Structure formats: C-alpha cells, structure tokens
Length: 541
Length: 83
Image 1 (tube, rainbow over the protein chains, first blue to last red):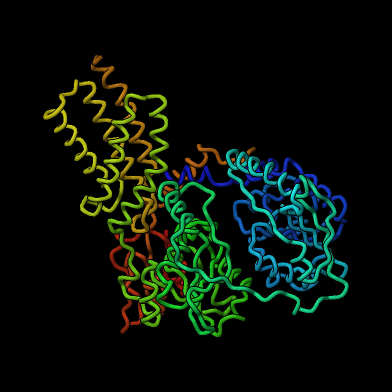
Image 2: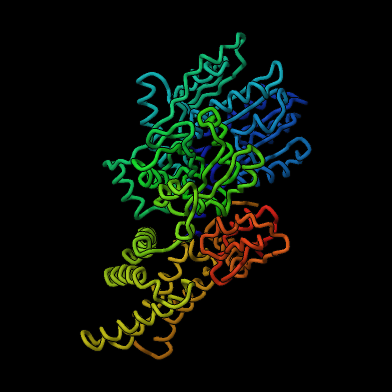
C-alpha cells in the first residue's frame, strides 16, 4: 500500500505541467511561446536541456527546427515522446535520457545553433550550473545563442518582499494540488559573466522572479582565472534544533515528498588529502547526515553527494532515480579529478540494484568498489583497506531498525486510517488507535520469531495472537456481546494483515511489498464484507 | 487520453508489478562465470559465495533471494538472469 500512495504523491508528468503553470501563473507558457516564435527558425539545430514533458520541444519542432531534447526523468521523457508523436513531429525531434551535466561529453563541439533550458538551472547546484555553462560554450556553433528561463530571487528589497509574500503561499498551494515544487536561482547573472557569457534579460514576469535570459558568448573571452576557486564545504556531525526537528518529521512522515535534500557536490569529512578515499552517496538529507555521523572524527574522506532525488540509495536505485548517469554527472561536475590523485570510488553496496558499476568503469575510467551495506561500518571497512566482511555485506533488520520503521509506517498510515475513523466513527477512535499502535510495535518486536519470511505470512500468527488477546479480554475483564466480539475479531484480523504486509517494504531483507499488494486488497475487501454480512445473515442486532 | 496517474492507475500498476515480482527467480549460468565476484560483493542477503579454486561463483539459498537484481546488473559476463 505504501508505494501506491507514494506513487500518487510523487509529481507525475501531467501534474508537473499543471503545477508549473500554476506556480508561474501561466507566465512560463508565454515565455515558451516567445522562445519558439522569436528565436527559432527552420533548419536550426536546437538542444533543449531538461525538455520535461516536451511542451517547448514540440513548439520548436513545429517551427521547423531539428530539436534534441534531453531529460533525466524517464517518466517525463515518455510523456514528451507521446506529445511529440501526437503532433507528428517525430522526424524533427530526438529525445534522450541524459543528465544535463553530461552534455559536453555526449555531443560534439559546435553542434547546436541554439541551446534552451527552462526551469532546470534552479534545480542544480552552483557547480553543476557552472559545468553545464562551460559545456554550452563549446557546444554552441559560431553565432550560437543560449536561452535560459528560470525562477530567480529578485533584487531590491521591495521586490524581494513582494516575492516572498506572493510566492510562498503560491508554492504551498501548488504543492498541495500537484505535488510540484521548485527553487529559485540566486546571483545567476554573475555566474554567467564568470563563465564567459553576456546575458540580457529579455522578459521579466511576476515582479522580476521569472526571467528569460538571452545569452551570447562574451566578445572578449575572460581568462579562466576569473572563476572563483571551487570551495569545498566540510560536513560535520552536529545536533542542532534544526536536525532534531527534521529527525522528528522524518521519523513519522519520511515517505511524504518533497524529501529534504542536501546540495549535490563534493564535501570534506575531516581533513582529507588528495590520497584520501572518495565515498559516494545519495542526496537524501537523512542519508548524508547518517554517513557523516558514522565517519566524522574517525577517518578523513571525500564525500561525493550525487542526485538521488532526495530518496535513500536503495529505494532510489531500485526506482530508477539513482543511476550510473547520476554518479558520472557528480564526478564530472565536482571536478573530482582535479581534487584527488586516485581514480577509485566507493559506492554504497545498497545502490548496486540500480547503479551500473561497469558503466562508470568503462565510461569515465574510475574504479568502483562496493562499500559496506550500512554507513556505520565505513570506518572499519576503510581501516581494513576496503576489505568487506560478510557481516558488513549482509543486511540485518535489528530491533532498533524495526522499531524505527514501524514508527515511520505508523506516522503515515496511522493518519490514513485514524483520520477517517476520527471523523466518521468517533466512538471507535481510541480503541482502534490503541490496537493499531499496539499491534505494530508488538509485531516489530516479535518479527524474527514469527514463522515465514513473508510479511503477509507472518501476519497469520500475528492475527491469531491478537484474537487470543481479544478472547482473554472478553472472558476475564469485559464480556462483549456476540456482535461486538465478532466485529472486533474482524477488525483485529484486518489490522494484523495490514501491519504484517506494510512492514514488508521497510527492509531490503524482504521482497518488495508490492508482492503482497493484491492479497492485502483481497483480504481487506473480504473482511469488510464479513463485517457487514455475517451479523445481517445471522440476524444479530 | 490522459496519463494522469490516479490512485486507481497507481493501484493497477502495482498489482501488475506484484504479479511479476512474486515469480522472479535467479537463473545462473556457471559456464559463463569468470569469477569476478561482483555478485558476492553486492548481494545484501548472502545468496552468493565465491569458489576461489574453481574461480566460479556459487548460488545457494534461493529462498533467501529478494529479487533486487543487484547481481544481475553488476555481472560483467551476463551470467545471471532474473526472470
């Protein structure tokens, strides 16, 4: 059940379109029309970085341009493909799955007359922005042009005040309606200047917060020395009010997007030297903080945070959000080769289900080592010269993890079940709350001793125990009338099945919870039917 | 024709996934194995053990397998399939 709701909560391609329209109050469409009408001519070779659902791609192809659209989201690309096919423009459009950072490596120099990008740069870290801009310079043919439309934080106190007053409620509303969110660029014009471009804002909407830049390579190329030196931040293990609040939120509502993210890029932990090992991880805030906590003060390493869409590495790799493409992009944009004197990456073992190690080895010639499954084993793994013991390799599901994951499940499903109960079935609120919380924690504790490896299977003994408890209650403390007793038997069985099946997705140790989904639904419906029909049939009142 | 994933379409997708996932099994072709041990390196549940003398991996405890696909993806010889 968890993944069904997560899927629904996730931004979908069409919801994204609507969300962006709403977030920009329709202005983004005007900008796209302007790009297509004023800058695109027949026969032009156009690269669209982050084509998303293909709105602009199709508009430019319709004007006769040869458009190459790249995007790092397979679902967005699928929607773009559909849109392009619908308008019969397949012959003029090439769509590719590609991380924006890698355009410089994947296309030959001077191969585009126009490069466009809308609402992509604001999603990237400053290093990625810089890397892509430099690539754009080589990819543009003579007289080529770069067009970037994005959200920016306006300059000037009044405009900025207006921006925050209008934007924050709008952003919240947009997220609630479409689960789409966006960030804004800071100081983009100076970055353009530093990378050797001349930019002109040719359209400005929403109080200067949505801007279209018309960008040309600077006539006199500035020396590379003008670029500010790359500053690599240091991550330290700290407990602050913010981390405590975040931990509390993540304990109950971890599976509700948008997920807290860490800026992608290279970081120091301790005082690493050019010989120190490089660890790679995803950009989920909790993941990064747990890795830092495990390492800080013990070993000196470089930590390369790659984009995993703010999801833990196991789920992100399994769901296609964390891939070799993302790791390669992080290695390139962070200029890791200029920082360290070796070519070895240590990847979390638990991303091996989606990050193709051989692609990284073959494409950028970096060695890939599979680190331990759990962050806490990293210091021992490094001390032993990257030797992994079986204990570091095999995932366990100890009590502490089980209690944590049960709480994570309860935070979300508790609400999902208890809120309707609270509204429509008030007298049952406390008994059901007590049952679901009690059953969940009881299950977490006895989990390893219940027979079977499958959550649904384990829920059979769980419901038997619950029913035994009910029997003791009714005989010893409070004899229930037959109809109530029957109803409680059904409720407890249902909650047990739900609890057993839901914890399935909470550890890599068990097959994905989807495996049980069908049965969970069938049993649920059967129980609801029993709940109503049996008392009716037997004439209980 | 709309692609909007509703609760219903998400449900359908997961029911299909559920059916597939239940029946996925590892098929190992030892004659292709060159003993690179990537499967052993990445398996989170311990289904693989290296046989160092024969330079071949051994697949055991199939009932432990969670069908995550890590060994399949990391095998350079395409000696493992999940189907």
